[in-house]
Image (cartoon, rainbow, N blue to C red; front, side, top):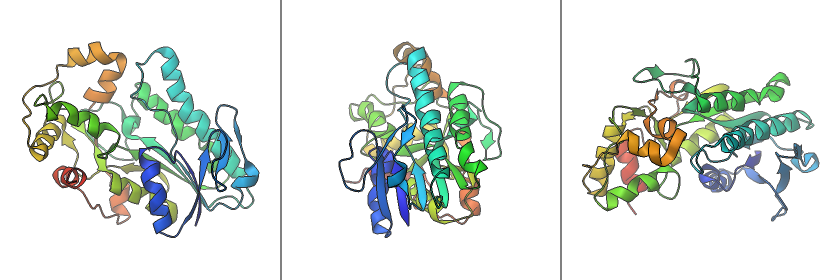
Length: 298
């Protein structure tokens, strides 16, 4: 298949790109600024523009780009950048896809389990209603921005990613730092649920969504075994051979991080990959300990 990929330099995109080549797909990167390779395609979400001529002939458009939610403190300006980086960029590509002749077979767009908000121990599936906090609203806008592609009859998939575990980026290296000095521990009460997925399984889910027409609409990309924060920290400590005895009080995190502390560290989301399992998707790393041992073995 001929694949157009945004976010190719991010955690997930950089892992997906070589897999596309291994699977025999021809991938072209959607990049901002001047193309560096002959296969690159220029686009600008800020300007609402994409190089339609160089996008012609793609079979699938995979959209993974978006500003990190865990960078600067959430000032009103930062929150607006986060919102626009997802909704505006997605709409630009959704509209561009409808102008291609022929249009792509599928538009696979990233989303996140932040869609569900803070839900305690409630088991959440793709049919669960959205939350009401900032990240839930961002995710609703993000998914809603694909409307032009849906209206044109394209197969649209919203991959709602949980915490993607990787040894080289994302949340896991940040989580490991205090443990290496014997300072690790649960966050707050530790009862909040964390829904996670091994990077390899996340890549496999993207590949499945690209090629399998059974994938449509929201798809939770998480392990079938979500864990509490306390279990997460105990397991990480065991794999690292370090103690987990110093909990991080919620008030300290809120002082350090401000508004983003609660949705990033203390929100509870017990999300299940119902659609993945229904399509026969097989997780290589369904449980946390095997995932961490694989990632941290080298």
